[in-house]
Image (cartoon, rainbow over all chains, first blue to last red; front, side):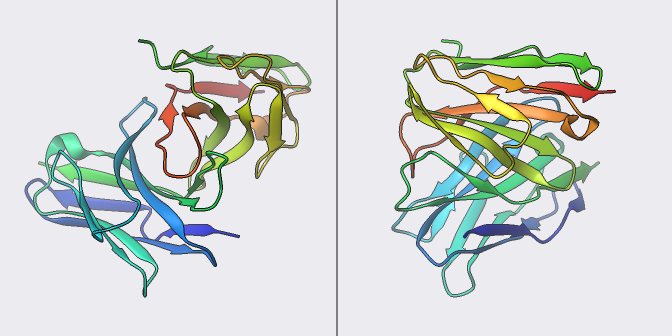
Length: 115
Length: 113
């Protein structure tokens, strides 16, 4: 079975500071990795994903995540956050060989960007 | 292009009542799923479907029922609501499994008194 652990439930940070949201996963088989973002009172939307190839993946709004197979981690980083980044962030995995469209989510991390 | 549409957005039920959360997508996605979101627990899979006429249980299926008679619709039925089912429910769809990105609805907030 697969599991996802997000190590921080809340991360407060000042505007323009760097941030890292941590995600570790457990799986005996290969997985795809995702980060989703949920803005207040909205559904989830994809931030970035790792499928294969380069272990560093980037989003259009400045976030990046690095797949580390040896440490089974997929931490999310941004060098300088903005007030508008305030949201809840979810790490998720999907089994490579599964064809069911199922995702396994972590518990979520609330990023609070303060002015 | 509406994407994934969920209704209702808000609902209050009494214990023991039944209701159906509606989910429709217009993207011709084969895969659809229902998740519930609870504080500190992330999203947990309730039921999913890999195509019309095919459904299966997820992580927390008890107390819920689904059917998939068309590609577009995937309703979630609460048979006899309980306070433990107070949650925010999300429907999602994707073209195919594995690497494809899920498209989520805006959510349905359910309170059971």
